[in-house]
Length: 158
Ligand code: CUA
Image (cartoon, rainbow, N blue to C red):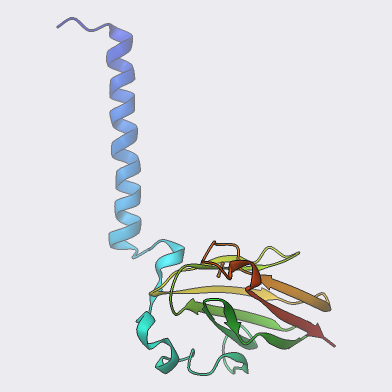
């Protein structure tokens, strides 16, 4: 089979790139232990209520961590627990959330917090609440007939 010189160069370049990229991904995954960000922590979705920290939803002060508070949410059709929570202004908070049943969303309107809550997985996001006010948390994954009713409120207070 006759192949044009440029075609050979291009094929070599393409295969070379593939080898380089697969090596980078391979070293990152198997040697450095990196995983996709959304799949770090798993949970038995049938035992959410008995599993820490989801046995006590709400805001908790923590010591010796990079964040000051942990804000724990449990989502289920068609509500969040807690439905309403107060957070001190300026607090560095790790939001930790999961779902007991189907896929739900966790979008804090007006901020860049937007997580998907998947059964069997824990979603986390660390942020600093530096603007006082009331924030609406809404579900942005269609989860059933009560989807549009599913919301919670975070109050950032001085
Ligand atoms: Cu929960 Cu939509």
